[in-house]
Image (cartoon, rainbow, N blue to C red; front, side, top):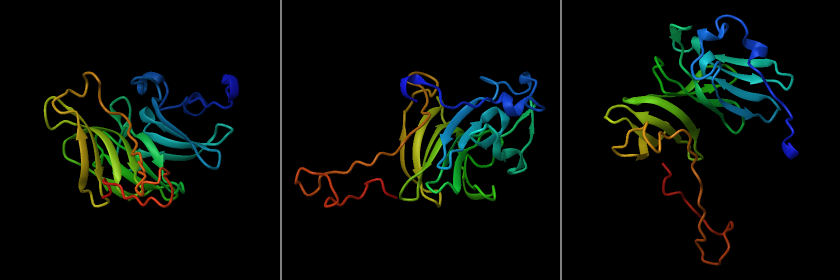
Length: 219
């Protein structure tokens, strides 16, 4: 809000002061719930990613969760902290119509990025790549491809990597910090967005609809 006035807040203690999330030492790793993503939806709900709770939830304005994706039910996973920690979901991204959700998974998940049907909570797309140790962000691009942020562990030192894959899983673009340990400066990539640069192709000094453009990265 204006002048820094807080307009809304949500606290995990409202929903999760119960087993297996409580006592906090059952699940605490870099925080209790370790919220790593929050997005305000078109209907006023808020999409929240709770890494340590192995869940993504949608929260009403009154703070109640009316949609819960528990990844324990995906791929036969186990969430029994502190021994079994689930899939550590990261940074869920909704499609423009909010019917699909991309999310990054870790640990024993057979896939590092999955797309889910929001209504059925079933997978509509799955991606795995040998050597990815941790995946932090995935975005569906206008051309249908997916931009993924991760760390490659096939080499030493581990390398930060951004790459774009087609729906069939073909890598069509990639960028790395070559031979630079992902945990040294400047650190590993965490998020990325593909920007559209629209040039003045007809040379009239104005960028408008008369300037056709096709991205050189289009897959």
